[in-house]
Image (cartoon, rainbow, N blue to C red; front, side):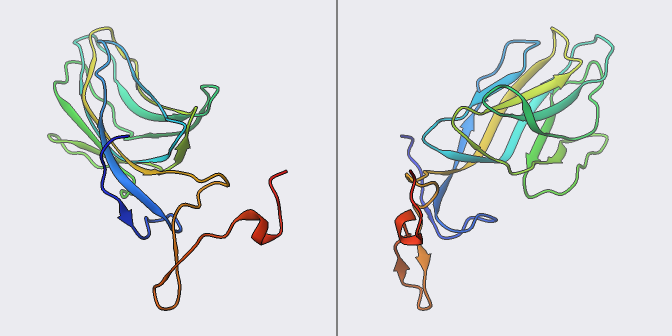
Length: 183
């Protein structure tokens, strides 16, 4: 398991629990290829930030970068993007996404900023970075993904603590204490 710092307390907009932030460098795909990352079964993860670079070839076409969230069957269930096209011959265009942003912004020079949906993903699901009209000479690089990570318990996410009136930790309640079972 990777070394990480534990954040005790609330992680917005999640209700309660212990999670940690983890930044993961993405493996650079080959030229003309998109990026894919499968989610590990032992975590519930939420993409909170992404930063990458796109270089485009001289082949005339507008490229549009999207971040796709796919279920276990490879079906897109949600998709983020900046809504601006990178032109042919663009060099070192930086894209920076954050789930704290509410709109896309860009100027004639500098990064393209865009919002992320903040969708929770689990094992068997996939994150894909896709470039519409990608040419064989286009290249994604310098990919860094930042996740909020959680370890779910046997009944779902219950590994955290609930703080009472005097901020004293209380144990999480189990299903049988709520009057239902897992059968």
